[in-house]
Length: 158
Length: 340
Ligand code: FES
Ligand code: FES
Image 1: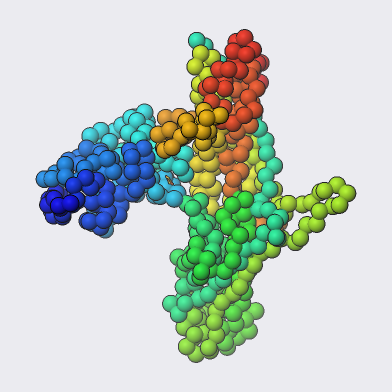
Image 2: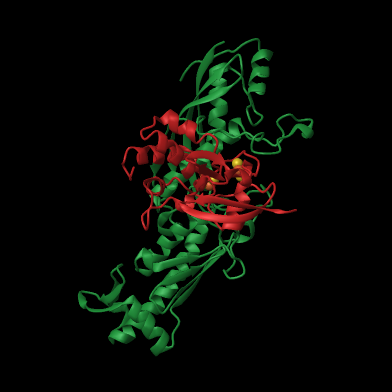
């Protein structure tokens, strides 16, 4: 199969790769770019741990054809921290014990970022809605919801 | 359609660890020339906090800062034997093994320090900040780092310790079949409040109030994290999770996360938790550990709450809307029980 040249922005940096037709964005990010922060959970849209932002909008990278992101801007967890400092959401996740095994965490953080970028002071219901496509097996969701609300309230610690 | 509110409670007496083969775990502790310590284990940390809690236990026993301890675990090629992370045994069994290993290593460390300071080891104490000094004379002091360097490059000693925790064998009484499966027990009581919809059979969690007695909580935030997450798993077992929702035809069973149901962030409820600390005599610093008990009381409490709400006694898990509806139909309508 012939390779397709593909260029896009990855966490603010221009990248160029060659992908096979049909490659999904999750595989392109992990295997071709080397960004391991989007996780593979189910590969079929059921768990949310592969979540990334495409032009600021939340998408499941496992269900996104890599070819469709040409010229667009992709944000992943790898680009979230600001220099040496954790993003307020990351800080709030740590302070609120919102991760145990951590497998859902990259997707949760991207879903939370997508929410706070467009709605800086969401209600509890809006937070719940924003992460309802993301499965967590460990935390019982409560600490994650609290972390996102804490980050939104500008209170890094609970 | 009517929604019926019901309340149910459950109390449990939960064994920590198991009896099988004495339920042993081993730990090895050694110092590095940097003055830091490594704990080698095979016990898995699945996110429940095993690494944090064994690190704290080791640091406290050695008398060094927690930052100076690194836990290397989950590789059975390089770590000493462990039965595993299950049966609520981690904090208690592995913690005890780490404590024993750290105690032995501390003995060697104090001997090495005594040699450097030219005093008797029994006259020395640690300050918990990385120094060892003569009791009552803090200026006659040496850092644990300098002790580690002296032990390695001057004295030719390994500051290390071995630990194992093994439960004394409990034989089965030939008359009664009785034996003692555990050395200590944790306890919990949980009250669940639910709404049962008599038209759809759906059960919604309203709130939970619980009290857990789990020995000393070595890391209160980690304990709370376990109790919150574990209660969610309890709700999931009680009301959602099954590989065979449409039994008897397994062909219709769930194949993925879309069909295998679990409560989402919108299905949880407020949960007020009280942690009671009654140190266990044989636990590391009195700890028993939360473990599986986090989830257990939720199931019977929810089943009892459903009975209280609609008068239907469902003893088959999970309690799906279909089962609730069939039971309500069979008795000719919901029969709310008195609220207690
Ligand atoms: S891996 Fe993409 S939703 Fe599960
Ligand atoms: S922390 Fe384990 S899945 Fe969310």
